[in-house]
Length: 326
Image (cartoon, rainbow, N blue to C red; front, side, top):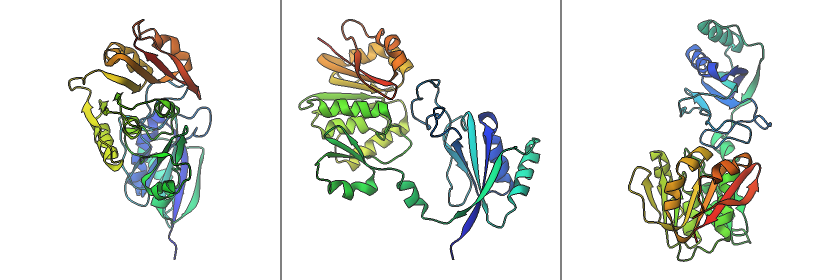
């Protein structure tokens, strides 16, 4: 017999989202998942770890969900919970009284029951398979294909003979779906990397560093401030059977390289401009992403006449800046 659950849905503000989630868990909910109530609309905010969308502030929003036990269990990551308008999905046993639990949570917080709420029955399913089904292979340009590990065999059967980059969704930014990462990959796949050394500053999952290695680079270094990103990049390199050097941004800088890439946000790109330029060897190229179209001039002015950067490609309001040292 298929098991069923009850899911209670309501919208709360970002400031109150975590308190409501805790109150529901204390009242006996199996799990509480937070979602962006503006998802799939122009007001959608980025997931944790992604750059903001055009028109949104540069600060990163909070984690995706917080939960206890049950089929949607997990833990939250980050200091801020929720989105400007947060939708909470509260999972209960099917026999539980959802209305009573909602009243109990509201009473715990000393707040009125939210005016907008609903409930539905949730059928049991293969939660792993359902999650994996959300991630399809992503073709990039003419030569690359980003595939999650569970779709590798399918990728090998493709007739276009693309270079496969095996990257699973994780805690580090960089699955290839975001326009900033996609444009950097497009630049790499059209470049001649044979015999050229590459630095990926702000490497995240390591996807750009791994792509450079798969495309024939003579040596690749991935640098990041986040220890989790360094672990992720090293593991992804192992999975893709390539060698890259990973190091913390607090370590001594590597020697200058022929290609330096930085897919981060506009403020770090401005602050780090002198250092990033110093990493580009004579005749080398600097590739910058994470810049909105409206930020082109304010970012470009931090890169002097020895290495001026100009727009190379624009996608969905984002721009990739490229410059060469003469």
